[in-house]
Amino acid sequence: MVIDAEHGGTDFGATSSSGIEKLIVEKITNKIKFLNKDENVVVHLTRKEDKYLSLSDRTAIINNIKPDLVLSLHVNQSINVAKSGMEFYVANESAASERSVIIANELRTKFMQDNALQSSEVKKAPFFILKKSDAPAIVIELGYLSNSSDRAYLMDGKEQDKIVATIISFISALK
Ligand SMILES: [Zn+2]
Image (cartoon, rainbow, N blue to C red; front, top):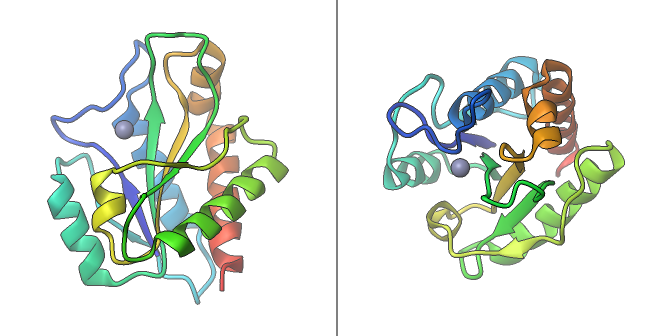
């Protein structure tokens, strides 16, 4: 199991006055690693600290680990401040695209059951990590930093813990 905290170092990702994408996803991924108590699930992180990694560095790390699943975490931003909610992406074409679609739909359902932000149907996108990963891979946009209520949600430690709990229980149940 690989959790990929995107961005880092000089790459800040989405920014707003009160939140920076790289720090939010880093916090959440570190919590997933720390709070996972299932000994059958080994959580690997592509980055443990605030460090820049190129997309090809990340996919090399991932394909070397040969995980069952890759979750790449982001938060979103838009010039349309009304835009909000979660988004799930899988590759249009990749080694494990069919399995990625199945898992992404299950994960989206799990987030809905756990009362996370609303989300649209799983989408396909030619993102580098998704295309190049040998294992099933999903990009999760956890919410919009540019939307005030999403931002409050993403910055809230308790809400972050709920996101972490959803992911841990999902990957633990995934067989
Ligand atoms: Zn991002």
